[in-house]
View 1: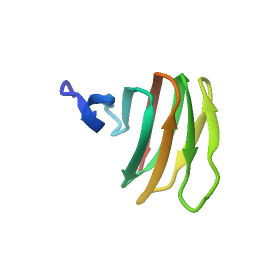
View 2: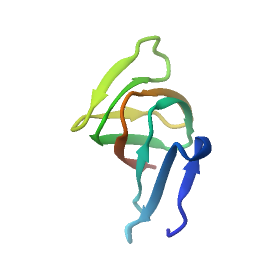
View 3: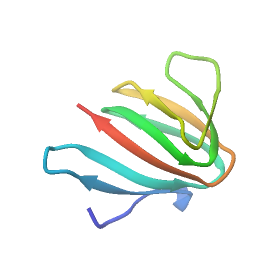
View 4: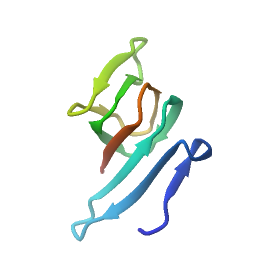
Length: 95
């Protein structure tokens, strides 16, 4: 999909890639800041480079994540991020 996904006044951007088998991924960049996201599908977020903290649904704890790590978000939920440095990510959506 050529059109960019732009969130939080341009501080988070991504591009959607659709595969022949129906798989969907987004590739994006997040600038430093605090963000609240919602998702309909289960997500696996891979952090390619950068540093952030994530608070997953049902948890009160913030977990540090950096380049080379990933985390999962359940479907139909919200999660929070505190992005410390410019962060490159790949998000996979699972049905």
